[in-house]
Length: 440
Ligand SMILES: Cc1ncc(COP(=O)(O)O)c(C=O)c1O
Image 1 (cartoon, rainbow, N blue to C red):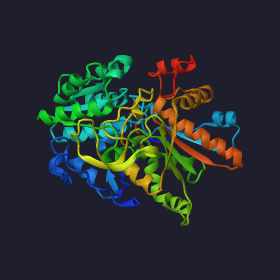
Image 2: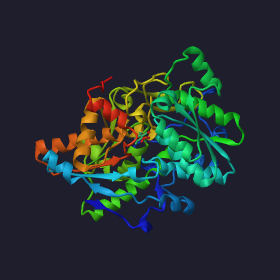
Image 3: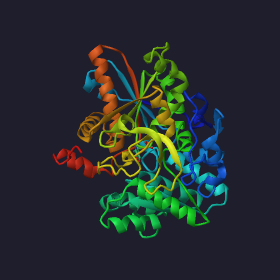
Image 4: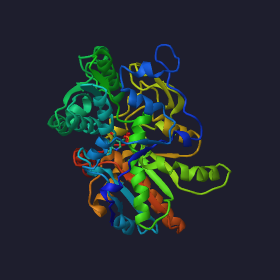
């Protein structure tokens, strides 16, 4: 059962969670001086409008008309009730998912790529440098840059560049230029190659290269696909639409909201608009009163940032060039094992997500990839579509919530983010279906 919205109901403002957080966010610190960074420190990398959003305390931020026009190429996205999955699980729970896989790039990432490119263009920037893991973010940004007439230069983690050529081809089709990272185009890349010429790379290394590229080219800015406050802000269209669509479906608030968590943007996009409704629920579990949705982050047990990381200031990249941010982290030099959910292989997490987890307003669970792929295949065999390995983490979490509801005989309403399709991840399915997928 699909719940569609009229295009004119697309949200016209983003929801800023900052004024609703359990405690204020701590400022990012300058990598050299250790002092809080100000707008001028960030100006070589980002347009002022995005720096403003990064630090804004305004509860709502208007979405520019030109951005809305492009988002309407695929938004509003459907809310789907997974009735066939419910039947297969024989659960009294009602399971809904927000289908972000219908975007041109096949994931939620274009929601922020379009907005970021718009503000860069408005500031006269002609070229954007970025990193990408498995290629979801790079392809979203290449698409957005093409629509606004900007050049897009992508440092793609070497392991994925060689193993997953199709996302590179997508980026090139949208006019992007792609090199494997580490590369010899940057000092950061050269230093890693000198230490380990055969390295498979990591997101942290690719970020160092893209930041250095932007800092050393005056016409170039840097763009990040997750973690930062403004990125999470742009994704809130997902949850704002979902709230309207749940109402259309005759539901009140969901009992639980889940998303996979790499840097935190798709989870935040769906969950943050529910934060004002659920502070009470979180307090209830820590001894207060109240009711409302539980928010749940699902991460890989091989990169267990929220469930096992330390809460401290750390760099966002490998080389220590970015500001330090307060977050759960496995350490900026941590190179996660090469699991198939490339987009979840990040040592840190969004400060907003970490703030919610640390204060007990959001829960976190971790799964090994074997259990995640079991869920992915069960979903494909009931609902039809084949999810991205990252998305399959949220599906695993949702299935376990539905099974818990069956156990307790509860009518639970479960909402999760279907963050992307897996049609370019079939090698991972091949490995799982033929017994070659290992839990690392
Ligand atoms: C389909 C999909 N889902 C989830 C993620 C995880 O990123 P985030 O936590 O920022 O949503 C990615 C990242 O590449 C992705 O491509």
